[in-house]
Amino acid sequence: MTQTALAETRTAEQGMAAHARAWLDANLPDALREDRPSTRRNTVAELCDWEAKLHRAGLVGATWPKEYGGGGLGLRAHLDISREIGRTPMPESVNSIGKELAGPIIMAVGRPEQKAEYLPAILEMRDIWCQGFSEPNAGSDLAGLRTRAVQTADGWVVNGQKIWTSGASKSRRCLLLARTGPVEDRHRGLVLFALRTDTPGVDIREIQSIDGERSFCEVFLNNVVIPEEDMLGSPDEGWAAATRVLSIERATNRMHRAWRFENQLNHLVSACLSDPATRHLAESTYRRALAEVSVNIELLKGHVETLVGSLIDGQEIGPRGSLPKLFWSEAHQGFARLALEIVSQFPVEASDTLRVARKRMEDIYLKSRAETIYAGTTEIQLDIISKRILQLKRKA
Ligand SMILES: Cc1cc2nc3c(=O)[nH]c(=O)nc-3n(C[C@H](O)[C@H](O)[C@H](O)COP(=O)(O)OP(=O)(O)OC[C@H]3O[C@@H](n4cnc5c(N)ncnc54)[C@H](O)[C@@H]3O)c2cc1C
Image (tube, rainbow, N blue to C red; front, side, top):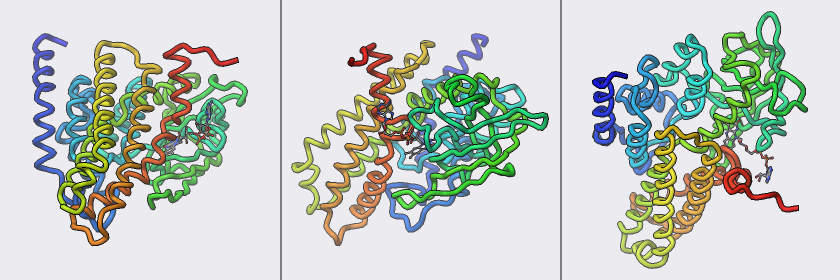
């Protein structure tokens, strides 16, 4: 990059926080606000429309190359935007797997024509992606996966079953991990595909979860033929790419979540303070517990900012991605339990402010139950931290 281009990029980066804040304040529709009353769930089309607007405003894909629709900026700009997105009570992305997992993998191992086809479609919300890694007997132990891919003259023929595939029924592409050899090969012979979900032989079945949503899916693959051009990387690169996905998922995915967490805490406290009947909940009964949540949020911000600093310095994240994942999921789940206990004490005949906060905290509680499971369970994070960061020996 020339000195002039570098200076232009720095100026653009420095203005991103202010731009993001002003744009979000001016453009987030009331219907999408999580701190306002709502009578219905937003449709996927409405959410895609909103996210496409975010992209056009430069708030999505800030670090992606300009030639693929990105902003060509650095990670610091992404962090600045993420803070503002977190502070704004807006819905989570319906395409975070595309933007935060598939996109970075495609940039790392994809061929130029794959990048040109897949990447702009993700940012423009033409293609939603899902992640087909977990199987009924391969979750924590991903290297035990059994879905088989056999190379033929017509392409790869894939057979197997995936489970817990979030958002599969609304996705156009699936980041699919399969194996080319025997199960005993474990990490070797794993291959990654950009599977089109409308390919014959792909059978997607939704599973209703505790919060009433039907986002989870089982995906059955019966003699699915995947063209050679939809293979990502080489047949033996699957495990390296998969572990990179997991490290990104744990470390930098949803970078906004510390600030979203803070927004949720502030919402709960301001709701309590809005009514003389509930004031004491924040001011005395739960004052200490709420203060502890606030300290956890500051620690979590520190984790994220340290990791971003390391990445900017060109360091590998590796197992350190487990730290924010573990800390966020445990702290947020604890907050969700506390929030539910507090809103359960709101009067039955509550004001709009209290009712909206109660509904939001109940939703947060239900969703939080899975936070210590997805992207690797708490036990797996503790195992990684003890072995790979602390270098502890297994007890005899
Ligand atoms: C909301 C949600 C969304 C998800 N979305 C996706 C998705 O989009 N795509 C996808 O591929 N997967 C997805 N998953 C699956 C998720 O990655 C797995 O559930 C997770 O990796 C755990 O695997 P498992 O469910 O098979 O449990 P198991 O691996 O069978 O674990 C069961 C229990 O045993 C413990 N355990 C297992 N191994 C060890 C060990 N070595 N040491 C100590 N304890 C251990 C675990 O901590 C857990 O408590 C999602 C899961 C959830 C809950």
